[in-house]
Image 1 (cartoon, rainbow, N blue to C red):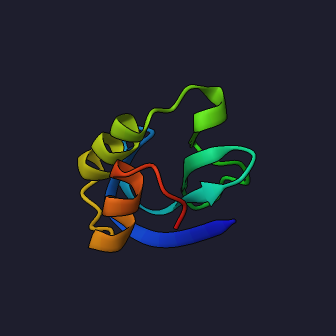
Image 2: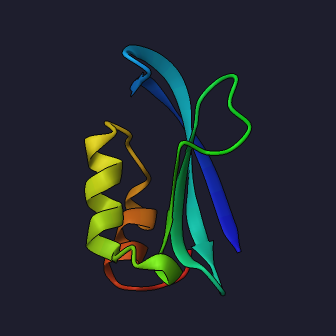
Length: 84
């Protein structure tokens, strides 16, 4: 399993912009996944994975929409359907 975390500067949450954390990676059971955590919330406000229908292209699109830069090696692995 791999799990990486990056900061999101302006994540829209409850009518305001907050600093959030994006966790993403690859798990042998769940496949590719991402989760978004905001302050004062125990559970992730977004939680998607391949096992529950997240495609590789949707993962890339969501990461791009969040304005987060992931390493090129991670992006390539996702596109090529390889664990990283």
